[in-house]
Length: 451
Image (cartoon, rainbow, N blue to C red; front, side, top):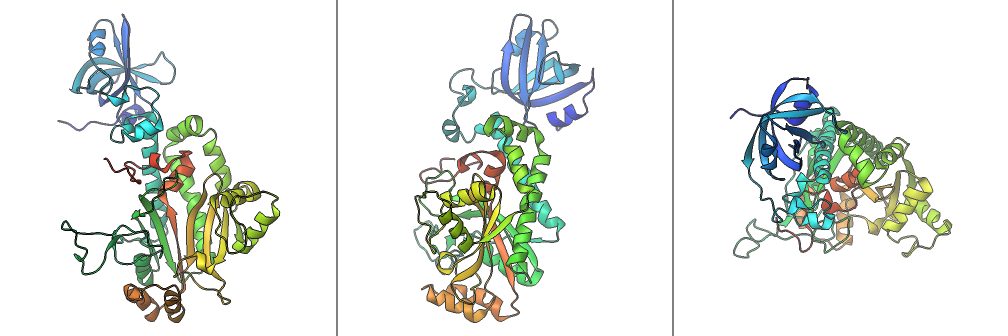
């Protein structure tokens, strides 16, 4: 069997009278007395290729026999389309059904306007819909844009372990591993699914200077919000010989660059998001990321909230955590664009963040964006051995799991910094998709791991 060309590639070089062979899945069909139409899609583009079956030749009966959802191989000739929405029709010379699909209600994708909730229950079939076809092409494009950004700047990609023995966040929301007999000592100590690759990638920054990890992370948090999942992907760069200001510059450049690159990679899909998912989302995001990102300290943010005249559900006293309502107000109403909030109270943040001289704050940052709130969290790391070890003890954490992490401060320490970007949250921001479950191929949330 000769390998086929994609519909997107074939259409890019289409000429009138050209005969081609195409393969794909039937999205829709219309059959009348004199002509039949099949809309074929192979995932290479959002729009379908229209196959026309005129009376005579292979006949309308050939189209009538093909069902929605079936996979086909067709041979035909390009002719200018008489209909709207496409430049070319493929006038069929022959059609072969490769895989049948029942023409009844047993095929879940027969429903024309299925809800997002229904489609989550059909995660294995939902990529055949226009919405999810576009979502997962955008996910692919964003992934490539991320790698391109770092590779073009000389960063080393490090594959950090999925199985971890220490908690990078200190929050304790980790999935513990056991073997098939229910034992927990397979690795000689307690082991968990990682919540972050940060601690491990810091070791490589101590040798390669600029590094990043991009992979799956896990949180055993019983959260049912539209922003949380038990399994998600994180991008975590780490830069040595750098302070918090260097990190903010990198993060701003990163967000702006991957936004433009992803938009450019699949314009048809983003036109779809712009029209059908969140009207105007592309223009709004571009306008936002093209502005300089504002910067303010946590203390300044608290003052802004308290002077806003707005009534918030959650506390805005100094020391209180910024909640989504606070973050969205700062980004959407006060700044009307992205804003880095820095220098958070010490006890709000993780043990590894660099302590200020007065010990009240750490050199941490969150990047807040309109509509979503926090999208990046990062910090300058604590490079001083005595301060790091003192902070681990002060927080009541066990020191033994972090012996190697302390070694990085013992042997050739440097100022260094890094951030984490939730990949799915970035994809939600770009596409306007409102629920994290709809930008993950197979979402893992409390009570949901069916596929």
